[in-house]
Image 1 (cartoon, rainbow, N blue to C red):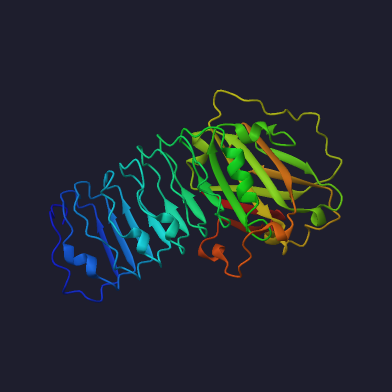
Image 2 (image 1 turned 120 degrees about the horizontal axis):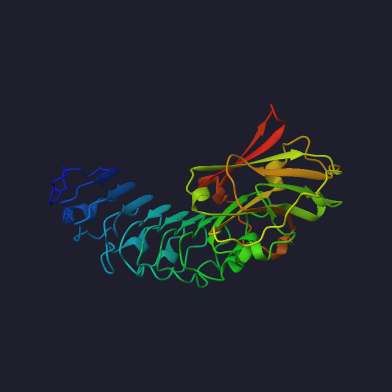
Length: 350
Protein backbone atom coordinates (compact mmCIF):
# COMPACT_ATOMS: atom_id res chain seq x y z
CA UNK A 1 0.00 0.00 0.00
CA UNK A 2 3.00 2.32 0.33
CA UNK A 3 2.96 2.83 -3.46
CA UNK A 4 -0.74 3.78 -3.50
CA UNK A 5 -1.21 6.96 -5.55
CA UNK A 6 -4.98 7.42 -5.18
CA UNK A 7 -7.54 5.91 -2.87
CA UNK A 8 -10.51 3.96 -4.29
CA UNK A 9 -14.11 5.19 -4.39
CA UNK A 10 -15.58 5.21 -0.86
CA UNK A 11 -19.26 5.07 -1.85
CA UNK A 12 -19.36 1.35 -1.07
CA UNK A 13 -18.66 1.99 2.63
CA UNK A 14 -21.60 4.11 3.81
CA UNK A 15 -21.18 3.14 7.51
CA UNK A 16 -17.45 3.73 7.74
CA UNK A 17 -16.61 5.04 11.24
CA UNK A 18 -12.82 4.81 11.47
CA UNK A 19 -10.12 5.21 8.83
CA UNK A 20 -6.32 5.32 9.09
CA UNK A 21 -4.11 6.04 6.06
CA UNK A 22 -0.50 5.98 7.17
CA UNK A 23 2.89 5.89 5.47
CA UNK A 24 1.53 5.97 1.89
CA UNK A 25 4.43 8.03 0.56
CA UNK A 26 3.19 8.07 -3.06
CA UNK A 27 -0.43 9.00 -2.26
CA UNK A 28 -1.42 12.20 -4.07
CA UNK A 29 -5.22 12.18 -3.91
CA UNK A 30 -8.03 10.98 -1.67
CA UNK A 31 -11.13 10.19 -3.75
CA UNK A 32 -13.79 12.98 -3.62
CA UNK A 33 -16.44 10.44 -2.51
CA UNK A 34 -14.72 10.37 0.85
CA UNK A 35 -16.15 13.78 1.72
CA UNK A 36 -19.71 12.45 1.86
CA UNK A 37 -19.13 10.07 4.78
CA UNK A 38 -21.30 11.38 7.61
CA UNK A 39 -20.76 8.38 9.92
CA UNK A 40 -16.98 8.78 10.26
CA UNK A 41 -15.82 9.40 13.86
CA UNK A 42 -12.05 8.92 13.59
CA UNK A 43 -9.77 9.92 10.71
CA UNK A 44 -5.99 9.71 10.62
CA UNK A 45 -3.92 10.57 7.56
CA UNK A 46 -0.28 10.39 8.54
CA UNK A 47 3.02 10.74 6.64
CA UNK A 48 1.52 10.84 3.17
CA UNK A 49 4.04 13.42 2.02
CA UNK A 50 2.85 13.82 -1.59
CA UNK A 51 -0.81 14.33 -0.69
CA UNK A 52 -2.18 17.56 -2.15
CA UNK A 53 -5.79 16.73 -3.06
CA UNK A 54 -7.89 16.36 0.09
CA UNK A 55 -11.70 16.41 -0.24
CA UNK A 56 -13.79 18.74 1.89
CA UNK A 57 -14.82 17.24 5.22
CA UNK A 58 -17.63 19.67 5.98
CA UNK A 59 -20.24 16.89 6.00
CA UNK A 60 -18.44 14.76 8.60
CA UNK A 61 -20.56 16.08 11.48
CA UNK A 62 -19.87 13.03 13.69
CA UNK A 63 -16.08 13.30 13.44
CA UNK A 64 -14.49 13.41 16.92
CA UNK A 65 -10.81 12.87 16.12
CA UNK A 66 -8.98 14.30 13.09
CA UNK A 67 -5.26 13.70 12.62
CA UNK A 68 -3.50 14.97 9.50
CA UNK A 69 0.15 14.99 10.48
CA UNK A 70 3.47 14.63 8.72
CA UNK A 71 1.98 15.36 5.28
CA UNK A 72 3.95 18.55 4.47
CA UNK A 73 0.71 20.47 3.88
CA UNK A 74 1.30 24.11 2.96
CA UNK A 75 -0.89 27.21 3.25
CA UNK A 76 -4.24 26.60 1.59
CA UNK A 77 -3.87 22.81 1.62
CA UNK A 78 -5.58 22.09 4.94
CA UNK A 79 -8.93 20.48 4.03
CA UNK A 80 -11.86 22.88 4.04
CA UNK A 81 -14.72 22.45 6.46
CA UNK A 82 -12.78 21.79 9.67
CA UNK A 83 -14.44 24.79 11.29
CA UNK A 84 -17.84 23.16 10.71
CA UNK A 85 -17.04 19.97 12.65
CA UNK A 86 -19.15 20.72 15.71
CA UNK A 87 -18.35 17.42 17.49
CA UNK A 88 -14.58 17.46 16.97
CA UNK A 89 -12.66 16.87 20.22
CA UNK A 90 -9.09 16.32 19.01
CA UNK A 91 -7.30 17.99 16.10
CA UNK A 92 -3.72 17.03 15.21
CA UNK A 93 -2.04 18.99 12.41
CA UNK A 94 1.53 18.39 13.57
CA UNK A 95 4.57 18.23 11.30
CA UNK A 96 3.17 20.22 8.35
CA UNK A 97 4.52 23.21 6.41
CA UNK A 98 1.74 25.82 6.69
CA UNK A 99 2.54 29.22 8.18
CA UNK A 100 -1.02 30.24 9.08
CA UNK A 101 -4.13 28.34 10.08
CA UNK A 102 -6.87 29.86 7.97
CA UNK A 103 -9.59 27.75 9.58
CA UNK A 104 -12.06 28.86 12.22
CA UNK A 105 -10.72 26.75 15.08
CA UNK A 106 -12.40 29.05 17.60
CA UNK A 107 -15.78 27.77 16.34
CA UNK A 108 -14.97 24.19 17.41
CA UNK A 109 -16.82 24.40 20.71
CA UNK A 110 -16.14 20.75 21.68
CA UNK A 111 -12.41 20.79 20.88
CA UNK A 112 -10.29 19.67 23.85
CA UNK A 113 -6.91 18.85 22.23
CA UNK A 114 -4.98 20.82 19.57
CA UNK A 115 -1.59 19.55 18.39
CA UNK A 116 0.57 21.72 16.14
CA UNK A 117 4.08 20.58 17.06
CA UNK A 118 6.88 20.43 14.47
CA UNK A 119 5.18 22.96 12.20
CA UNK A 120 8.42 24.79 11.42
CA UNK A 121 6.81 27.58 9.39
CA UNK A 122 3.93 28.42 11.75
CA UNK A 123 4.32 32.06 12.76
CA UNK A 124 1.26 32.68 14.93
CA UNK A 125 -1.49 30.85 16.76
CA UNK A 126 -5.16 31.37 15.93
CA UNK A 127 -7.93 32.21 18.38
CA UNK A 128 -8.75 29.05 20.27
CA UNK A 129 -12.05 27.52 21.44
CA UNK A 130 -13.08 28.15 25.02
CA UNK A 131 -13.05 24.50 26.18
CA UNK A 132 -9.56 23.64 24.95
CA UNK A 133 -7.63 21.62 27.56
CA UNK A 134 -4.37 20.70 25.78
CA UNK A 135 -2.28 22.77 23.37
CA UNK A 136 0.99 21.38 21.99
CA UNK A 137 2.89 23.74 19.69
CA UNK A 138 6.39 22.60 20.62
CA UNK A 139 9.19 22.70 18.04
CA UNK A 140 7.44 25.36 15.96
CA UNK A 141 10.68 27.19 15.25
CA UNK A 142 9.08 30.23 13.55
CA UNK A 143 6.51 30.82 16.30
CA UNK A 144 7.46 34.12 17.92
CA UNK A 145 4.32 35.35 19.69
CA UNK A 146 1.21 33.92 21.30
CA UNK A 147 -0.94 37.04 21.04
CA UNK A 148 -4.20 36.75 22.98
CA UNK A 149 -5.20 33.32 21.73
CA UNK A 150 -5.80 32.08 25.27
CA UNK A 151 -8.03 34.87 26.58
CA UNK A 152 -11.23 32.81 26.53
CA UNK A 153 -9.64 29.43 27.36
CA UNK A 154 -10.67 28.87 30.97
CA UNK A 155 -10.12 25.09 30.81
CA UNK A 156 -6.56 25.28 29.45
CA UNK A 157 -4.35 23.08 31.62
CA UNK A 158 -1.57 21.55 29.48
CA UNK A 159 0.46 23.88 27.26
CA UNK A 160 3.71 22.89 25.52
CA UNK A 161 5.59 25.68 23.72
CA UNK A 162 9.18 24.53 24.15
CA UNK A 163 11.67 24.94 21.31
CA UNK A 164 9.81 27.96 19.93
CA UNK A 165 11.20 31.50 19.72
CA UNK A 166 8.46 33.06 21.85
CA UNK A 167 9.81 35.69 24.22
CA UNK A 168 8.38 37.41 27.31
CA UNK A 169 4.89 35.90 27.16
CA UNK A 170 5.33 33.04 29.62
CA UNK A 171 4.31 34.90 32.76
CA UNK A 172 1.21 36.33 31.10
CA UNK A 173 0.07 32.94 29.83
CA UNK A 174 0.74 31.21 33.15
CA UNK A 175 -1.27 33.81 35.07
CA UNK A 176 -4.14 33.39 32.62
CA UNK A 177 -4.12 29.62 33.20
CA UNK A 178 -4.10 30.14 36.98
CA UNK A 179 -7.24 32.25 36.66
CA UNK A 180 -9.07 29.42 34.91
CA UNK A 181 -11.23 26.54 36.07
CA UNK A 182 -8.39 24.19 37.06
CA UNK A 183 -7.52 26.33 40.06
CA UNK A 184 -9.84 24.61 42.56
CA UNK A 185 -9.73 20.88 41.79
CA UNK A 186 -7.57 20.51 38.70
CA UNK A 187 -3.94 20.45 37.63
CA UNK A 188 -1.73 22.12 35.04
CA UNK A 189 1.47 21.47 33.13
CA UNK A 190 3.26 24.25 31.27
CA UNK A 191 6.44 23.98 29.15
CA UNK A 192 7.90 27.24 27.93
CA UNK A 193 11.22 28.44 26.46
CA UNK A 194 13.35 30.94 28.29
CA UNK A 195 13.71 31.95 31.91
CA UNK A 196 11.10 34.68 32.41
CA UNK A 197 9.05 32.67 34.91
CA UNK A 198 11.89 31.34 37.11
CA UNK A 199 13.56 34.77 37.24
CA UNK A 200 10.45 36.14 38.96
CA UNK A 201 9.57 33.06 41.00
CA UNK A 202 9.00 33.78 44.71
CA UNK A 203 10.52 32.34 46.82
CA UNK A 204 13.46 31.90 44.43
CA UNK A 205 14.43 28.57 42.94
CA UNK A 206 17.26 26.61 44.48
CA UNK A 207 20.11 24.83 42.71
CA UNK A 208 19.33 21.14 42.13
CA UNK A 209 16.18 19.02 42.07
CA UNK A 210 15.07 19.10 45.71
CA UNK A 211 13.23 21.83 47.59
CA UNK A 212 11.98 22.00 51.18
CA UNK A 213 9.01 24.31 51.47
CA UNK A 214 7.94 25.95 54.72
CA UNK A 215 4.16 26.03 54.99
CA UNK A 216 2.57 29.21 56.37
CA UNK A 217 -0.19 29.13 58.94
CA UNK A 218 -3.69 28.52 57.57
CA UNK A 219 -2.18 27.40 54.27
CA UNK A 220 -5.10 25.10 53.50
CA UNK A 221 -7.57 27.95 54.03
CA UNK A 222 -5.79 30.77 52.24
CA UNK A 223 -4.32 28.96 49.22
CA UNK A 224 -5.64 26.66 46.50
CA UNK A 225 -2.61 24.59 45.49
CA UNK A 226 1.12 24.16 44.87
CA UNK A 227 2.99 25.77 41.98
CA UNK A 228 6.21 23.89 41.17
CA UNK A 229 8.88 25.19 38.80
CA UNK A 230 11.95 23.51 37.29
CA UNK A 231 14.62 24.89 34.98
CA UNK A 232 16.56 22.48 32.81
CA UNK A 233 17.65 21.68 29.29
CA UNK A 234 16.30 19.54 26.47
CA UNK A 235 17.37 16.31 28.19
CA UNK A 236 14.79 16.72 30.93
CA UNK A 237 11.74 17.35 28.78
CA UNK A 238 12.63 14.71 26.20
CA UNK A 239 11.57 12.01 28.65
CA UNK A 240 8.09 10.49 28.60
CA UNK A 241 7.23 10.82 32.30
CA UNK A 242 8.35 13.28 34.97
CA UNK A 243 7.76 12.43 38.62
CA UNK A 244 7.86 14.61 41.72
CA UNK A 245 7.80 13.06 45.18
CA UNK A 246 6.32 15.01 48.09
CA UNK A 247 7.05 14.03 51.71
CA UNK A 248 6.50 15.54 55.14
CA UNK A 249 9.67 16.75 56.83
CA UNK A 250 10.56 18.35 60.09
CA UNK A 251 10.22 22.12 60.18
CA UNK A 252 13.66 22.44 61.79
CA UNK A 253 15.57 21.18 58.73
CA UNK A 254 18.82 23.06 58.15
CA UNK A 255 19.04 25.21 55.00
CA UNK A 256 22.67 26.26 55.30
CA UNK A 257 23.72 24.33 52.20
CA UNK A 258 20.94 25.64 49.95
CA UNK A 259 22.18 27.58 46.92
CA UNK A 260 19.92 29.95 45.01
CA UNK A 261 19.59 29.16 41.30
CA UNK A 262 21.30 31.48 38.86
CA UNK A 263 20.98 31.42 35.09
CA UNK A 264 23.50 29.21 33.31
CA UNK A 265 24.39 28.47 29.70
CA UNK A 266 22.65 25.09 29.81
CA UNK A 267 19.25 26.46 30.83
CA UNK A 268 16.83 26.22 27.92
CA UNK A 269 13.38 25.30 29.16
CA UNK A 270 11.03 26.08 32.03
CA UNK A 271 8.57 23.45 33.27
CA UNK A 272 5.75 24.47 35.61
CA UNK A 273 3.28 22.21 37.42
CA UNK A 274 0.18 23.27 39.32
CA UNK A 275 -1.50 20.79 41.67
CA UNK A 276 -4.64 21.86 43.50
CA UNK A 277 -5.33 20.84 47.08
CA UNK A 278 -8.55 19.37 45.73
CA UNK A 279 -6.54 16.64 44.00
CA UNK A 280 -4.76 15.86 47.27
CA UNK A 281 -7.83 15.74 49.52
CA UNK A 282 -7.47 11.96 50.04
CA UNK A 283 -3.92 12.22 51.38
CA UNK A 284 -4.40 11.63 55.10
CA UNK A 285 -1.18 13.29 56.31
CA UNK A 286 -1.56 16.43 54.22
CA UNK A 287 -3.31 18.39 56.96
CA UNK A 288 -3.28 21.90 58.30
CA UNK A 289 -0.89 21.13 61.17
CA UNK A 290 2.15 20.23 59.06
CA UNK A 291 4.82 22.89 58.78
CA UNK A 292 7.12 21.74 55.94
CA UNK A 293 7.16 19.50 52.87
CA UNK A 294 10.02 18.20 50.76
CA UNK A 295 9.59 18.19 46.96
CA UNK A 296 12.00 16.26 44.76
CA UNK A 297 12.11 15.77 41.00
CA UNK A 298 12.80 12.06 40.82
CA UNK A 299 15.49 10.49 38.61
CA UNK A 300 16.39 13.63 36.62
CA UNK A 301 18.67 16.55 37.29
CA UNK A 302 17.75 20.16 36.74
CA UNK A 303 19.66 23.33 37.47
CA UNK A 304 16.87 25.05 39.41
CA UNK A 305 13.82 23.87 41.35
CA UNK A 306 11.26 25.58 43.56
CA UNK A 307 7.77 25.58 45.05
CA UNK A 308 5.27 28.25 46.04
CA UNK A 309 1.59 28.48 46.92
CA UNK A 310 -1.18 29.94 44.77
CA UNK A 311 -3.69 32.15 46.58
CA UNK A 312 -7.36 31.24 46.41
CA UNK A 313 -9.42 33.05 43.82
CA UNK A 314 -12.80 34.58 44.41
CA UNK A 315 -15.28 32.25 42.70
CA UNK A 316 -17.15 35.24 41.29
CA UNK A 317 -14.01 36.06 39.33
CA UNK A 318 -14.22 32.86 37.31
CA UNK A 319 -16.01 33.54 34.08
CA UNK A 320 -17.17 29.96 33.53
CA UNK A 321 -18.68 27.72 36.21
CA UNK A 322 -20.27 25.06 34.03
CA UNK A 323 -20.84 21.66 35.63
CA UNK A 324 -19.39 20.04 32.51
CA UNK A 325 -15.89 18.94 33.50
CA UNK A 326 -13.56 19.37 30.55
CA UNK A 327 -10.82 17.59 32.47
CA UNK A 328 -12.67 14.30 32.11
CA UNK A 329 -11.25 14.17 28.59
CA UNK A 330 -7.71 13.67 29.81
CA UNK A 331 -5.80 13.68 33.07
CA UNK A 332 -3.01 16.21 32.89
CA UNK A 333 -1.27 15.12 36.10
CA UNK A 334 -1.58 11.81 37.94
CA UNK A 335 -1.52 11.67 41.75
CA UNK A 336 -0.52 8.48 43.59
CA UNK A 337 0.37 7.56 47.18
CA UNK A 338 3.52 5.49 47.56
CA UNK A 339 2.87 3.53 50.76
CA UNK A 340 6.46 2.26 50.99
CA UNK A 341 7.92 5.76 51.29
CA UNK A 342 4.72 7.46 52.51
CA UNK A 343 5.11 10.03 49.75
CA UNK A 344 2.82 11.60 47.18
CA UNK A 345 3.97 10.90 43.63
CA UNK A 346 3.01 13.58 41.10
CA UNK A 347 3.46 12.26 37.56
CA UNK A 348 3.09 14.16 34.30
CA UNK A 349 3.49 12.98 30.73
CA UNK A 350 5.39 15.28 28.39
